[in-house]
Length: 585
Image (tube, rainbow, N blue to C red):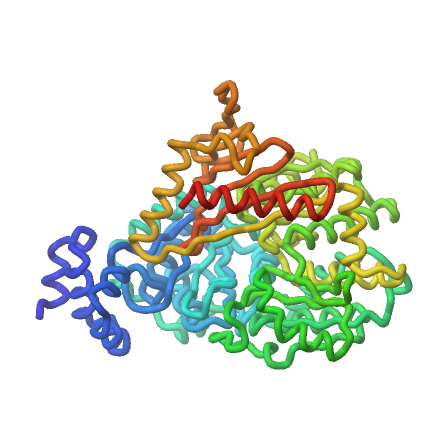
């Protein structure tokens, strides 16, 4: 067999997939367990594991666990960490000495990867602040700001299946990096040619020298106190008998949420025992994703037993929250992210108006694939609304900009994919904040004899029957990525002019930065950053949007309508979705 040095001499970045595979198999830095997995690979598995380097994108990286350049493993994590360390060192001594905060969730190897990051960054003389146990993404964002760190890293794959893990990078404002600094960081990561050649110092050595510092409960306490401040009404305005069921879906939110609800006086909290402990296999659910109604199965069982008013679920890193409430037939129904966002927004704004704390320059930020339902509500309260690209980093970027200019006061940010933010002490979506405000809204309205479902129907009657849906196709591997690229290319070259009998009025191409009026061909410029997204506006207020996922091997198709009745909206949405997917396929 060729030695690692023989293979490396061929030019590590230009060798064929099989040579890169052989290089890993021969290298003395690849441990024996990984080599055994390499030897067992089929030809197809080998190609997928080595046909490219796992992409470090604008939000970090995410992929399947295992050996290979296109996998999440200690070697690719070390490469990303090396790039970040070099990035910070080149920013100057003042930036580097501020340090890096690191958190990790309950997934396979999350704690191992966190230690790899700490070792790699610490080797460059950069202080590391490491959470000693699994912690949430929003608390990592909070910690970066609280500690005055130069950057943050959280090891998580959010709500992906158990075979995935990932790494997300945060800037000194506690937000994921916006496009320009993210692209700069990417160049540093890509400049690390060989992840197998990196040899950081040992964890114990760095900890003894004070470069790795373990965080204590002080950050937890400060974070929970901040979250508690999102409360809007007094305890006597809420129904103290509200029955709550909560599940963290085997993730990081179990301890902070139960402590928070107890601190805020909610006594009737039932937790889903089978899902309270961190479990990297997520053994009680197919997907640990509160967007999936099936994830609520056990919570609904508990809810029936205790006659619950509201069920809440968070994903493994606690940045997404789902809500399930009783409908008009007394059965539990899982709300969409758009519905929950509209309910929480309406409650927040109505309370602030009643309390006299609604600012004249208040603003709501939402993404381009989020329902206009929330925008309609915000406008009724005199609150400005701005759309951002998909990804909470864009909402965070706008929060920062509004603070610097003083033009607006941030009130709420959300996206249809179950992400919400109330207090900008965190600069990412925060399921723990969202749990508290959703529970408070349910308790407030119960005092008035209403359920959250009742309030939602009232909002539909007032603002229109908004309906949205999401359809995804999953295409894994090299061939899948090519197929998704072809879908976008085809829609750009031959955009639809009629969808389900509705005329397409405008087509927006965020990659080109253009908005085209279909009837006249007139083109105007978009102001948002470039992104591989297409959006079509139809007659009657309907719309659809196509976006490849930045974190999963998926292409996502979003659809929305607003009609005069629930039945009309449901029917129109179904027709539009069916027709558009036929066009795609």
